[in-house]
Amino acid sequence: MLRRKVEQTETLIVKLQAHTEKGTNPRDLHYVAKADITLDEVKIKIHSIKREAERKFIGTLTKFHYRRVERNNDKLRRAKSDKS
Image 1: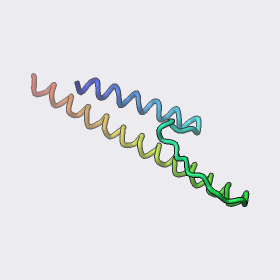
Image 2: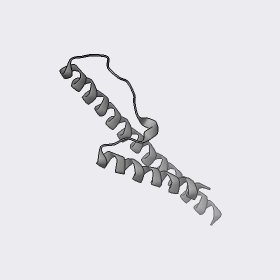
Image 3: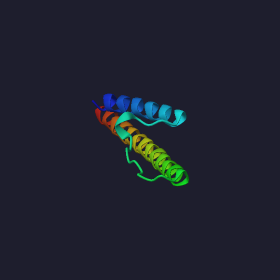
């Protein structure tokens, strides 16, 4: 059971890293705020802020999954050492 959780989390990390490299975001993490402003400079600024926030969120989510993998691997090691 723990081994399966570790494998799933590692798969998620790989997918998130692929999105980070491409500069995209997973479909369910898109932020769909739209500015109702006619000035192009302001729209560009809002778009860049939105992109930066999404990028940081993906980075934080990846770090969370790394910690989750470490925690579950530690549990696996403890379970194996308890058996022997």
